Image (tube, rainbow, N blue to C red; front, side, top):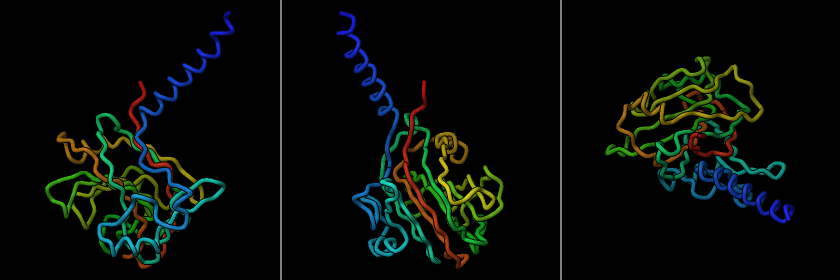
Length: 226
């Protein structure tokens, strides 16, 4: 009789484990093979014209059965984003994978004339200033700024920047990042917490007039393990 109960119990435990794992994950994007060769579904720029231009910079690529976003900037600066509402009290942690194959030489996020990033993930929060929303920008910098360095965008004072990788970081391979957006939000903006409204991606090289190549994958929010 014991054997009759073993398999149902194993199945139940596996189901509970999977359910708990799903409950602590809020998926933003893993990219789909169905979008290969074009922009990922649900991602766009602020204006239709810019979205059309973005198609020349960003496209979904499939390698070894895995789909990811490939970005190649040739002196361009166009961000794409996906709207998603996230309660940071429930899902404070953001993770993703990225790799850089070419840095925008001379890029330094502190100054307008060099304000390019080889790869960047934006977390955007709503404010009454639609033209200047609060945002945290996590970057793979082409500069030698130290990892963890914090500054603000020279173009938008409400956009705060954190350097996660720099020109000395190992390129041409996938790197997984994990950041606590809730902690970073409190550091930059205080305790009046807003829900996330959009996740953005940008690889740009317009200021340095160079090229930058990067890839992105598996973007998701996590709740803390207990």
